[in-house]
Image (tube, rainbow, N blue to C red):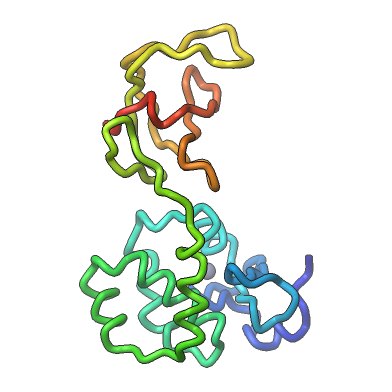
Amino acid sequence: MALQKVLEDRSNNECELCNQKDTELKAYAVPPKDDSKPENQIVVCATCLGKITEVDYADANYWRFATGTIWSEVPAVQCMSYKILTKLKDTDWAGETLDSVFLDENIVEWANAEDDLAQEPHKDCFGALLSAGDNVVLVQNLNVKGTSFTAQKGTVVKNIRLVHDDPTHIEGKVNGTAIYILTKYLKKN
Ligand SMILES: [Zn+2]
């Protein structure tokens, strides 16, 4: 959907997070709010949007702009920045920024609302937390539905994706085929 004029004007046709311009920009409603009004939305580039929707915060340095955008005059941008910094609070810079910023209570509440509703994390068979991009090893042979092969115990599955809304499954490639795997049948490598 084309950006609404109001968002176009507000963002100055730049990603409201990383400031990239001359790129395709999308409106993103900061959850759990919906896209019913521009105040709920931020204008983002494809890179930022992809990382946000995949909950991919592995490259902490990518998000350093959040130390600036947290001071935005746009509540939705502040909210998203707060969410980003919270994900990265173990880094010095994000932790310091969170300590020094004072946000409206409503924004903090908005930012935390999604996590409050959040699901269980993805864990491997030993309870180790799994993240997108992890490599895992199968701990038993698995018959792969819809294919003729068995994924062998000991197979390394690289660069997994977490299945959103389902902590019991990850997605990964075995024999070049993307399959869903139960997290209880794998171990973090
Ligand atoms: Zn961006």
